[in-house]
Length: 324
Image (cartoon, rainbow, N blue to C red):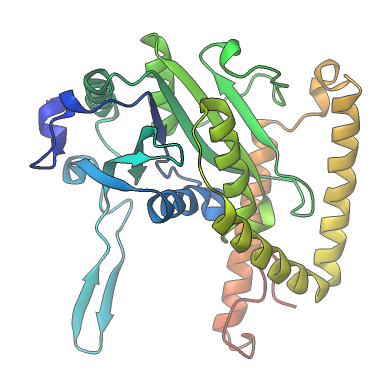
């Protein structure tokens, strides 16, 4: 049975007992990572803030390679690149010179409970006070409206003013969800932030959600994190999405319908009716159905391109709807 010492290895110059940070943010990509939000946040934090790597987890003990096949590049007559799965712990310093830790990488397939214990060991050694999980989920929401974020926590006082969106749901487990649950069981302060991603953009970069999550993280923890570069990327992405939608009447109708639903939802929320009308909220099956519909549409678009009906520039027809 793997122990914390065998699953996690620090860098040669690092002694975790000397590391002090009050916050750990977890961005492990699960089976969704809708809008590639967790990857966008990882890149943004590590590109804009001072940091160094503290150590890494042994993914060879944690990954089912046949179930989650890493990408390799074959160039002409040989293999030239291998994208090895990683899970690493980083020490990051925010804009106000306050450090926090970042746990980033791929969701593990195996030995979840052993990995939970290994991460708890790291948390105890570094005296972490609060653990924040950020993630995303595809939802029937339009890109033309503010990004909604579902907040959850081990104690309601950690998310003051929270207005729950969902009732009771039965969901398939992910490792980040299990880790959040186990840390909550052990008495740790845990906060979860999940962005709602337009289901038709689930497999494309959606920087707007990354901006919203970074701001929510800063608000929940007091850490100073810049968002300017992400905001610029978000503006460019919105322009590209808007141009593609204008080229499709079907896409325009979809967005208009989602806008109407979103506005009605917000009106009920502000009027206090939301909590009294749980039957109007999407269920776990609704969420799964939306995601599956998106994936089917995306696959249909890919097949049509393979049949020779690709765009002139060789790209995809659009982010989440079939090629015209």
